[in-house]
Image (cartoon, rainbow, N blue to C red; front, top):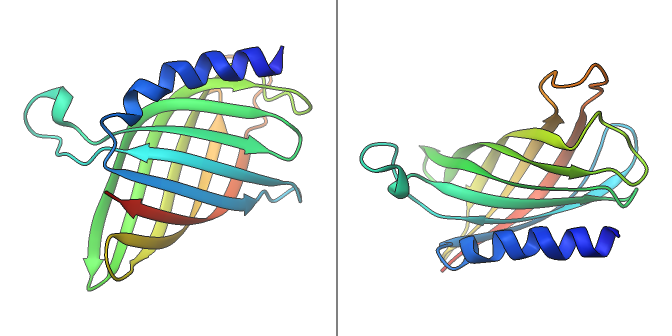
Length: 154
């Protein structure tokens, strides 16, 4: 059942990767001691103009308990000084609990991070993200993941 759900949601997200301009892979830990991995596709853009030109992104998040979350939303990277940047994103998505019940299947992921642009089109960053159902159910413990991320633009 988990595999069929994963294949379904990957099928929904794959078309977005055709428009991606960068790929992010990351590995991290949550404050409760578990681990997780992240895969994201980002499209650059600006908030002015048509919505289709905004900086859309899609993300997958898996953890050591076999839980996964997949979402689509907005991501923005802002230069701070020199090679340093700040990144943030907000994505609503689907959460599939295998071991950790976070209260329902609709969850919102918010992320903030700091990064360093490397030579060429790659970057390293560290981020913290938070999954929450936003109070859609009475059970809303949330989940965090601190992640070291590598980004490659193409």
